[in-house]
Image 1: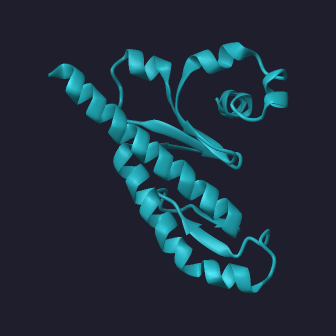
Image 2 (image 1 turned 90 degrees about the vertical axis):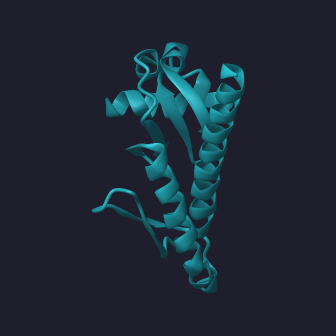
Length: 143
């Protein structure tokens, strides 16, 4: 399964990567949001089964299978980690992973640099926005 997730992410990134992976893999997922660091998606097999309760967020070779509430919790963790960005910048090395990012998984924290933190924040913000937009549009269409 991890290889399958990795291929889905790999296929969604730069143009030169698209030729290396079979396009059929992207047919297995519904992309919610993506950026340079990762992708948020739902498996189409879950959507067919009306299982909208979980989505996959994958970045930096890691995948998190989260509920929308857990994605919101993750967003708060990112916001809290931004308090330490000044410490990262004082090192004059933007690639130094000096920020500890808590995750929704109780026993998993990530060491990230300032650029990764901003990209993860964008990935999660974009995912939350798209989830809310989809919910709003579905509500309008139901009426």
